[in-house]
Image 1 (cartoon, rainbow, N blue to C red):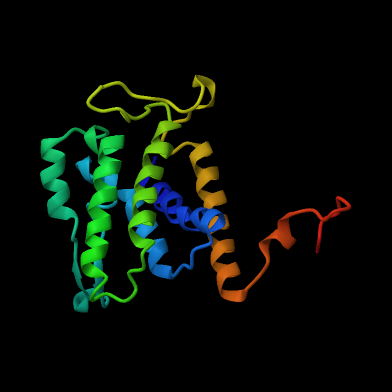
Image 2 (image 1 turned 180 degrees about the vertical axis):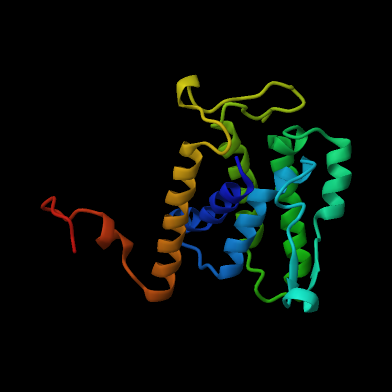
Amino acid sequence: MKGSTHTVIGANTVWILTLFSGFSWNPFLIIAGALGGLLPDLDASDSKIKHLEIGYGKGRNRMAIKPFYLPSMIISSLFKHRGVLHSLFAVILVGWGSYFLFLFLSQWVSFLTQEFWLVLTLGYLSHLVADGITKYGVPVFWPWNRNIHLLPRLLRFRMGSFTETIIFIVLLFTLGLFVLNSYQNLNLSELVLANGGGNMIY
């Protein structure tokens, strides 16, 4: 899938996790989920996360850095795309690594809540799931070098296809609803679920 789609899918893990666990969220968790959704593509020679900029200003006054450019250059030279970084082994490493990173940084960074490492890891896992429903598949059981598919052959699609565009639009919409609900205390169930008599609540 394209980087933009992985970003939105990763960001959506926040509201999915909230739905099942009820933890409190903040906007930085959406960033963590989106970042997790991009991390597996550090093994690609030209990816969205490789060229991700952090900075401020415009034009000649713009100051920015690409924090993942060098790591991506190194990793992509050592590992093939959709290799070890697209495996359950990598998910476990990212989970443990982000957990201990949270324990270390949370002493000084106030917005790093205990859910940070979990959302980052779920965002990472979402990348594998997303690629697993495409025609290419992913080697989730690396080092067993066989691509696994999560959908029947007829339902798989190619990167950049119309199906991927629909997925992107739908998940962008659901993410927007989640943020709107969180800030305005809307009851989404009243917007999308039927009442006891089977009629939609307006």
